[in-house]
Amino acid sequence: MPHPLLKFRLLLSVLLLFSGSPDGLGAEKRVLIVANAAAEPYSQVIAGFKEQLAERHVEAAFTELAVPQLSAGSSALAAEITANKPDLILAVGGEASELAAHSSTTVPIVATLILKNTLFETANMTGVSLTYPLATQIQWLKKFFPEQKRIAILFNPAENTKTIQDLNKETERAGLELTAIPVETPKQLPYALEQLAKEVEILLSIPDEVAMSPKTAKEVLLASFRNRVPLIGLSDNWVKSGALYALSWDYADLGRQCGLQAQQLLNGVSVQKVPYETPRKVVYTINSKIAEHMNIAIPDSLLKNAKLIFE
Image (cartoon, rainbow, N blue to C red; front, side):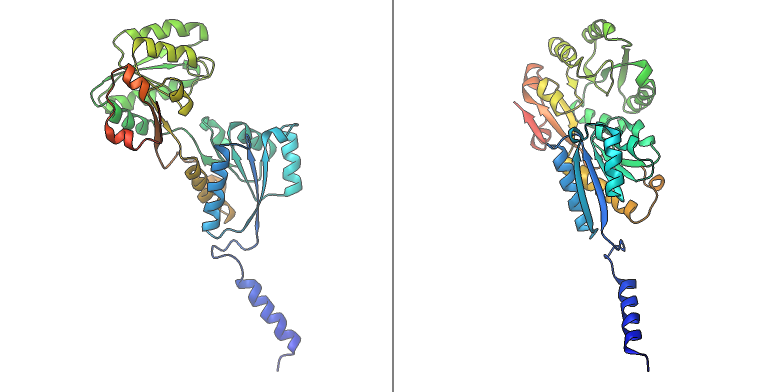
């Protein structure tokens, strides 16, 4: 008959073998969260992320940092990574994502609230981009403008030539006419904006550090207003400032989407097998004053389902 001590050891081994979460993650995971700031919408992303992991029974201990706390930049974050030994990093915002990419080449990173998809070329990074697919953008443009055909876009060739090539294919497929107006330097912007008076019905914006940036926003919005050419903006702030509408984001859902990716990584799936994604939920904001100024009738169904309406 087995000795009582031997029986106890066997029982303990069995318990250890079969213990752990329903998803098989075992011991509590350490997650380091780095955000651009301790404010909205970052907090909504983080809350959604935590909720998703909790719903999937992922046991995790969280350490949260904001970029302003990391006065020494990537070296400070690298020190935090060394001290905390996280199993995963959630980076929320462009600055936070770049810091994370420079601070570790081994810890899996899930990043979001970033517009530059080139960041996802980092070997240990995946996440959810803020940029909607061009097909999605054109689909929603046609919902707001079912009759209009002539679209203009301002772009810096050094930055967005490939995007314009792809957009040409999408607009042609949708039966739209695209006029791509190059802006190589800020000095060329006034001349480019003069083209809005020449048979252009809609001005579509894409992220562009020369043609469509915080530095050029006022000039672009003013030209849109004066020429009564509605601008499809880049964010809620653009709509608040005078764009007709913009595709926006459900920040909590972005966090939950990141949570699903994080679960795979914490389960041992490699970052290379978890490609970055675009937002799965489309929301939008509208400026009703601009619609009135430009005599644009927005369907009630679009007004009813808007995330936010600026009046």
